[in-house]
Amino acid sequence: MNEAEVRQLFVDSGAIMEGHFLLTSGLHSPLYVEKFQVLQYPEYTAKLCAALAARFVNDHIELVVGPVTGGVLLAHEVGKNLGTRAIFTERENGKMTLRRGFVIKPGERVLIVEDIVTTGGSVDEVISVVRQQGGTPVAVGMLVDRSGGKVDFGIPSQALLHLTVDTYTAEQCPLCAAGKPFTKRGSRKL
Ligand SMILES: O=P(O)(O)OC[C@H]1O[C@H](OP(=O)(O)OP(=O)(O)O)[C@H](O)[C@@H]1O
Ligand SMILES: O=C(O)c1cc(=O)[nH]c(=O)[nH]1
Ligand SMILES: [Mg+2]
Image (cartoon, rainbow, N blue to C red):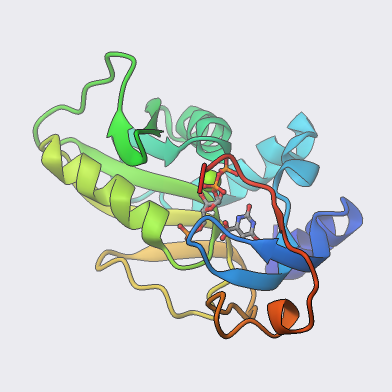
């Protein structure tokens, strides 16, 4: 899939939403990409993940890790394409962690996958978990990088779709200043 096809899939699925949103980073934004409007179709998830996995076929990936919620699906499908195990991280008392008895072997070469990246904070936390467990974070694969190319994980990264979207602190948010109420969509408890 090329970038235009990925963009069209997100638009046609109704994933691109306008309004006033509180993001997982605590930032506010007039645009939200509701990945599950796309991921609810297994056929689309499979196509996107095949395209993402293709970017990393020469990286000798041994394990794919993604953060809950979308990362569970993405890791599974990308791992299927790469012939690896697939596990996920989740937050415990707000801290990203590995549960469920998941183990990363020493030196294991890990691909981190993520659905939407805004600040890159969630991916950074997953990278830290992988390092703490003794694994080797090799690269990051994203469906959508909405940071305008600003994110830098210190390891190679690839995104299927690049967007540049405004984000604001609550204090600087023009939508707050205009009195427009915000909504919170993701699973993180803020
Ligand atoms: O780059 P960041 O600033 O960290 O933001 C991106 C993260 O926020 C969203 O997850 P969220 O925590 O809202 O939960 P969800 O995946 O369950 O929707 C999104 O799925 C990414 O994981
Ligand atoms: O930053 C976020 O929390 C976020 C932004 C976005 O567009 N979509 C999403 O699922 N999460
Ligand atoms: Mg998430």
